[in-house]
Picture 1 (cartoon, rainbow over the protein chains, first blue to last red):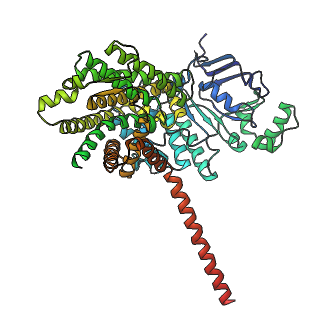
Picture 2: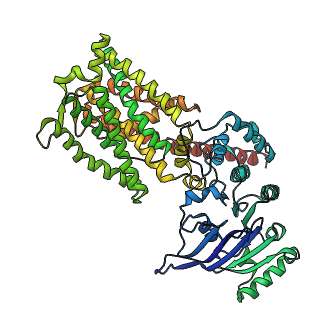
Picture 3: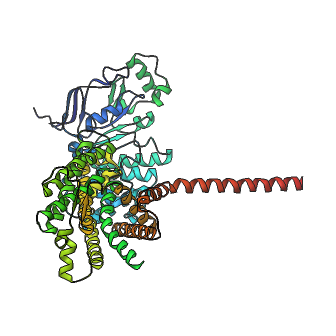
Length: 270
Length: 321
């Protein structure tokens, strides 16, 4: 049955790391989630709650033990990582992760422009692309449009994250996945990148999952908030309810939902 | 002396092909590929055997190139599909090639266990022999011209290839594999392809070398990766500030030629040629550790400066106080 309003659906997904050893860790425990088209969901939860596992399972960094992952009515559960790449724009926590440091800014953009397409023997960058890249880079307001042939390794962390964000949306993905993409930046740069994120997501009405450790950001951005704990989603707040959220209310909700006295700031914010 | 140096230069051009191959695996893929040692001999064995069998030497060299590509793919498959660590994958291929190379050379003689082949009776049917007859020049000059032309052609082809979409994805794989997969690049394929091209070129160098010295030996590849690395490092030192890819490749050719000239002079001045490998290893060791040595030197000179400044301030304080 085709479901046109759902972008991503996880059905009873389970993932256990190091099964059968002392280090056994159930990172996703029969997790189910339905993401509607156009949703901008912020994901919070303590360390080891399964946030990154969720992202990596969706993008296929590893296979899952059981359950199904459906993207826009396509079953992608068993699709190899590089084959699903065309559906997802990704920005990682580590600014070094999303770009190729040894290559030029324009070469990086060219790689992103060909995401999910076959790589043939045509020249890596065409002249018309360069105009597009210049236009897009000027949106960032960082002056990178004048440094297109500079190596990305020369850029600062914030510049790289902004560039990665641009690369991940250069070709419209079905979903944008942001895994704590501002966590490694200083507060001012983080705010800049977040504003840019909000702009890009809003402009294209992109379906987005954003993992964050900053609860205020989780409340301020997006139309829906989910909280994870112990490989499960324990809280899912959207619409008007989300607008009324406060950090205190969130902490309280966490202790109630998880049924544990562990809900202090340290557990969530560390 | 002059003869020694020109011979050095012409050999430098041949080894440059090998160094460019090593550059692809070592610098572009960041993969220290030891299969190189076997691939050099593989190229030499294939070319020597086919020339013995009367095949056109140019065709024989191309087949040697293809043989190297297969060897590189094997290393690539071992490391990507079977998840064997890179160094070990290279060693496994290298060791397998030792036996395979003996088999290949045995085809020519018909006696099993042939560990070397001489091409002296076939020297007119090597690429250098054919060109010598065609151009009517001395061997040294033929090798020089042939090597220079070859180097330029290979640089041009590599420059083109690594500028294409496919070539860019290979370069990107070496620099950030995780990101490449996120961009939909099959990094297994790009690695295998990169290693295939790298070893293909190394085997081509091996075939040229055997035709140059009219001799193929199962041990001729020993230490070749270190020689390749030495050429790369010398080239990068000489062309330090260069960013253009074609010029960087040219730098490696220059590095290889410089290395061979140094070797020629050292041997001419009386060093036993068996010490050559030790000398090469020391060059590479020093060159690779240069950044650390430089930093340590810089740090200690800074410390000394700070200490002397502190002493000055102390003196000042004592004087005024």
